[in-house]
Image (cartoon, rainbow, N blue to C red; front, side):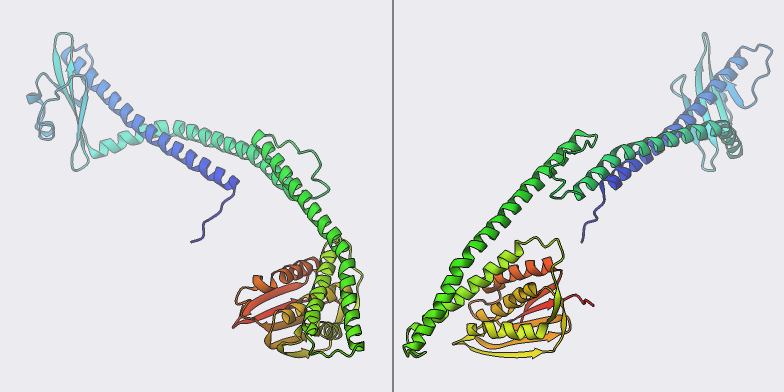
Length: 417
């Protein structure tokens, strides 16, 4: 199951919203608890006043809601049926809820030289009216407090998100805009020291990677350039040696022939690789000079130039070259086609190599030898990587796959008018 990735901003919002909801829920529960406790305190206070009036009359009419007696046995049967035992602790309110929803309150009240028991039977209807009356009295205050609390929490959440997200967004935009020209610019201030340290780390890492890339490109460019001369000398001298052998009347069956062929293949491979590496080291940021090129004709030329690689091998070369042309850099196209054809010829020892062209597409398939097996890295790694980098720079499509012991390479070109 794929994990759900959320942004830092979404994580902060989620945490704060959950925190605020928990606070509001706790606040509401606390308010309800205080509300019920307040009602109990008011009831107990009224029952104590009723007991005082009953035992010490002061010309004030007793409260008919409360029944006062000196003993619990004098309480009404309706009360004692619900609360048969007298309240054991004085100054504490006891209450029992009847099945129909009525409430019975009992209080043991101590006076200076006397004691009294007070009961209060609250019916369901009276209870509803009492609760409704108290709710109406406190609802307005509760709404005001809750509204102010939510408003303050919302303002705090908005300020916090703005305070945190703005420097993080600025860090993301700055890091995305880094390139060779801006890497040396000073690191901006992102408000928080952690973000500033992270920005410095990003700049140092990219600077180090860029310097390594520059050194690698410089090495490849210089090494490839220096290798061109000795490789050309080797290649020319092999051709000269073959001419001398022909003049001396030596046949192709002589022991030196396979050796010369292997040397010729190796020198051609080195020449192709150095030309490819030199091409890759060029700055291709500016548009390449293009011209109208017949792809099928260039492919025929590349096949004829690389055909010597199949000498001595039982390889059958089949082609299906549909004539089509497009605007390309001739040198770049020749290097790419040479790479894929040379790889197919060089790493096939028997079977059929099939080369075809369609509009905006070149396909080359060849059988895998036993040494290569199903791992293209063993025989095709360098050629594949070079071709992949070339096509990426030129924005051409490049795919390769292995199926039924057949290696297939496909180059797709953009249509240009």
